[in-house]
Length: 141
Image 1: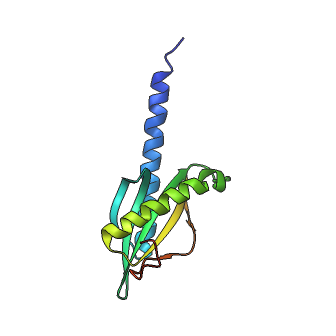
Image 2: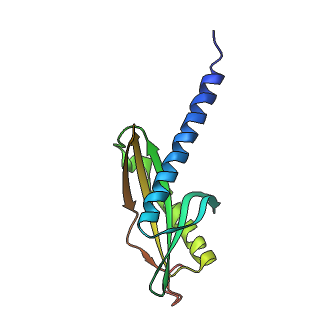
Image 3: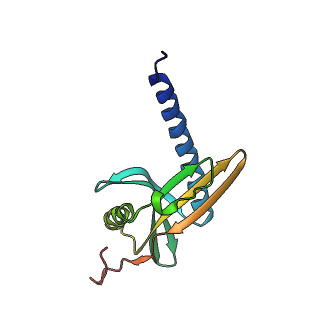
């Protein structure tokens, strides 16, 4: 019987490469929306943030905290892939990152990337309305 470990390692390497490609596509999409890279694949308070990007709008600095999900087939079960507990963890991480970069507003998003041959389908899902991070004391940032 052949050793299954090499197959498992090969699958893991292929999955990691797919994930990196999806993150690059998501980052390029965010760049097209005016976001600039700040941090990538950072762990904050128990959550992994795939992309943390900044953008200036007038006098305000906005922070994007995104989780990227990449697939070779359409993602049918979005709720199952991005449960509320994971969204809450990302919001906690976003609050800490907001403080670290001095952002005035933050957006938490799931960016799905479906790669089918040369075709790339990117969908941007916002967790909820952007959080106002003004220092007035009313916001968690």
